[in-house]
Image (cartoon, rainbow, N blue to C red; front, top):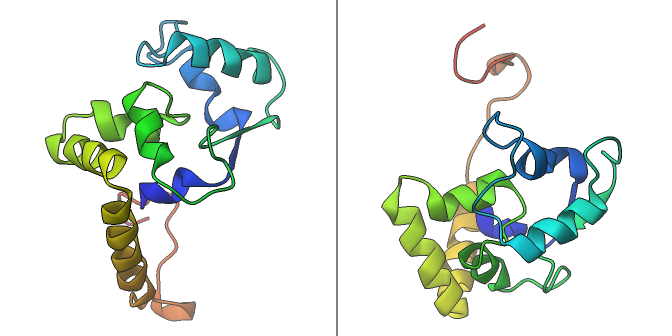
Length: 139
């Protein structure tokens, strides 16, 4: 669940493309807030610095809250996968981002239910499962 990005850090290598070559045109991601973009560039230079880190939620990096969703609305989602929740083609995720940004208790409730559901998944292990090099097809 993307709401888990409300806490934690990301290495520069995971968001560098957004800063320097988002669409293969040597330009930054146009959805990034300009001030946030310049801040991230200071942490993550175009060359080197791949292990430098930035918080997934810079406003409250050690607090589990709904600020992550507010930041996405303001163009301050760190990872491409965060921003796509709002700018992607699936209107339902855009609505969820808005609802979670407005209603922290709704986010907490639905996050808890998702964690319980994930905890009930019984993954295949050992020789019962399959390890794939590409998850989209059988190797």
